[in-house]
Length: 380
Image (cartoon, rainbow, N blue to C red):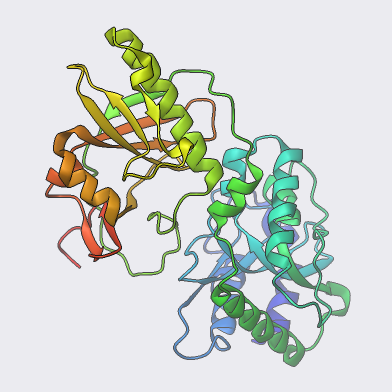
């Protein structure tokens, strides 16, 4: 079957399939979306390219309209993460878009208000879209998927598009035209991924998230080694490692949370709160951000690593920080601050990281250490 025929068949059979309510792998419509569409696209991705193609009619309940996505494995393996190339059918089955689009799940985690979420998606799309040269009837505006708020996913998909080519399903181009467009958008995707100016999704999220006023004391606990994870292929693009320095907004928020916590802790211990110094705020970079006191009144040296996410499983430590960790031993602490821009952040404290033998794989001895807090199992 050609791409044109598959799209026509999906359109013709979707209404009857959707009326069944729940996903049926035995249904021909499921086969067209999940298997046939994928197999046809796989013929055109080129040899040696690390792409994964996935079609979906929903999870459990049938979705408002089907989609078929192409994931660059160096960016993402999932429709909830990163950005990817995706065919999106409109809910009324009048239009089809081939779109470079963001996964909307991460935006939904931080922006529960629909209007705020859509504004954030459009701001992120505009930022990335500015790296793309206009042409070839490229569409940089929100999509028209005929979605309503009850069509939650497609309602968000309308705003998550960075750039797209649109088709009228009553006048769908021939197969040669469709394939040419797909290859063109695939190359655009590849070039965008390789662009050194491309921000990662976390940076785009951080740019739109206003730091929240902390309304509750952070949940503080000592570091517990993560359970080993199964080793996966490289390039998942899921942001598990903090391979670049956190943005100033997130870093400042994390340090503010730790500073406020240490002030309260030192007060409760009966010591002078002026002993707590926020060195980083004053432009001092000795290899830690904050100096405070422990329960014995001894000076401790705190390096803060912050994230907008709810978990940090990997981070980088500079040579200066690592040297300070060895110099100060158990009194050098790393504070992992998660949910740093939310009202209820958390702090996990690594005491004396230099002595923890199960942490860390050397990335570059003269530059940085990469600390893996959830090391892979031995079965690589």
